[in-house]
Length: 279
Ligand code: C2E
Ligand code: CA
Ligand code: CA
Ligand code: CA
Image (tube, rainbow, N blue to C red):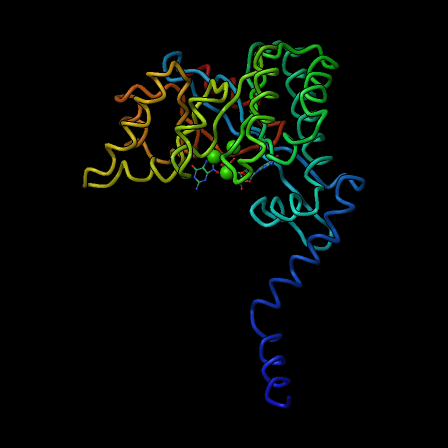
């Protein structure tokens, strides 16, 4: 028993315990984050290669807590999902992104697209499709300007339910992007059976472009798959001109990454649009 006791003490002093404590602290603060107005959306531009113009933005969630400081999505999205807080937070994200798009339209910046990340947990809510349409309609936006980004998930049992909802939204004109494409294992099935309009090539494939070996031919193949299915192909995490040149050569449609622009505050977006128009 003594041994066990000592072992337990040793166990509770390991980094694993710190991780648990951190998760609990984050969860505690996350519960009040919406009410306390601690969230903000940043927007990352997407460059349309053919038009050489910014065609839209991906909305990315930012959280600044007085006690914890800036907490990256990597650290809190998983916790928001585990606690189901992602449902009200995700609804806030969509409403906020639509509010911004509406503001752009009113300022004369017309026809941009906004992509919003959607958690599978949100998709599983009975009223998800209605919630999305209600928000879009309340701002008088054209659903074609809205893109929902979904990722592959382990929730395969609910596949039919999810497919049904996505088809409903697609029928209203909303675009559906398959995020992080190539990272998982069932991507091709998703492409075949879900009403996908956009394929986002995962950064890990973009990173191989600088390699000397032939693993970058896989990137080329993914672009080809997307194009052959009439999808809009977006490259994620493009950081260098070399990557951009390769993607242009291999007929990728859109580029997103630090090379075009980092995720930025609302106020900087119109500046970015004006700047790009001059190039
Ligand atoms: P994601 O959807 O794959 O978003 C792309 C991530 O890559 C973003 O990280 C973005 O800042 C980063 N990124 C973009 N360009 C570059 C680049 O050129 N180089 C590098 N190194 N990184 C780049 P972020 O904002 O930290 O978000 C991380 C993840 O958190 C997102 O990955 C997404 O899965 C999740 N997330 C963010 N906002 C939301 C949200 O509103 N709802 C949900 N459910 N998930 C979100
Ligand atoms: Ca995304
Ligand atoms: Ca992604
Ligand atoms: Ca992701």
